[in-house]
Length: 90
Length: 246
Image (cartoon, rainbow over all chains, first blue to last red; front, side, top):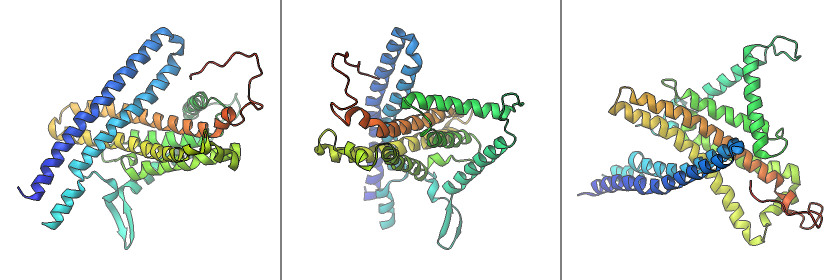
């Protein structure tokens, strides 16, 4: 295989692995955060508004980790700098 | 696949290039300005004057935002309200407009979100200095020890990057997923994803505003608690210790 095929293969595989592994942690963290938030709301329904707001902010911050992985894998697939470099050379 | 709005040049004259991000931002700015002008015509200032539905809508929306800012900042919202509310309305309207066919939200370009995050980055020390004075604000970089200075500076940079990439990733992935689904399952499924995208866009606008408020408020008030150990803010002996937590 020539270099551009190698670059394409490795980019695709890496993009898949990035999403697969990168989503594991945020998924676990979000599940834990939501379960703890629900527990807190069940214990103190009066504080539901406050807890929900903090929960949403926390969820967004956790979710941004998965979004970083998504951005990296999208760059690998759609805007790969090495791919354009190999295309330009050949 | 046009991932990058910035590279889509709409109009250019020699070195001057107008790209799609600028155009969509201007469209949205114009829309916001028109709305503001339309609402501010014929405001009723007294309680007895008749109230138009537009004034009613905007007043309730703004008072909700103001109450949220007050709860999050934990103090008088007036200094933060104009800045945070502008950020929220801009991002929220951009994400709403992404439902229109042919309109790409300006938040789906990293340039726009980075500009918004840099505005927060610049506003943070301004609010801190305004409240604490230059020296008072600079002192918080040396808290608790001067060794923490690089970490404070690093935190400023990383949270700005995180703020911009979070909004960009969410807005861009939304339009991209809908585009991909249109080629896979053109019937019905993209509509559901657009519904989800509508929710995500509003949540992200809310998150951006909340985080901006948190950063501004923490910069403005941090010294009240740690600045003067044993000084005027220290509780008199005999008072029970404050409960920690939010």
